[in-house]
Length: 161
Ligand code: FES
Ligand code: FES
Image (cartoon, rainbow, N blue to C red):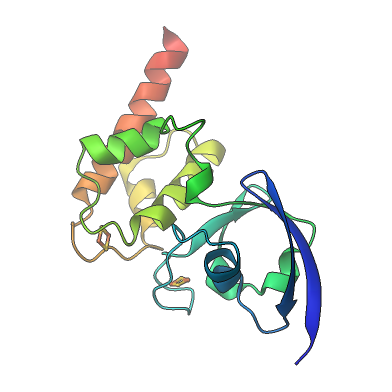
């Protein structure tokens, strides 16, 4: 089995590690870097729990190999908060009860953060379409959608005031 040297920045910290060719990015993040906020559910790109940002774009980390991210910048859910201050989206997940067990939550936060940066004012239908890439089995999606819509409203209010 081939081994490869990988250098990657994750949440602003540089990691230099040797990895096997077959190691998944999700396993690298969790088992090598110890960032266990990224969850692993299906390992088939279906549930969305493993979603992280690679160079600013949300991707399924179970569908990438660690060797593919050599030289890249990764952000995981641990890197969303700024000096311990939760983002407005994170706060609204708490306030709107957008989570119960929390297993799916990191992936949804990572996808939604990227989505709202690229599309700041989506309709409810478009939010639902974005969320269709994420399986949450315990809350129903109402609280999640409410949290996302509250984040959109808060941002519009901040811009107009
Ligand atoms: Fe990656 Fe389910 S664990 S999409
Ligand atoms: Fe439990 Fe989503 S909060 S699966």
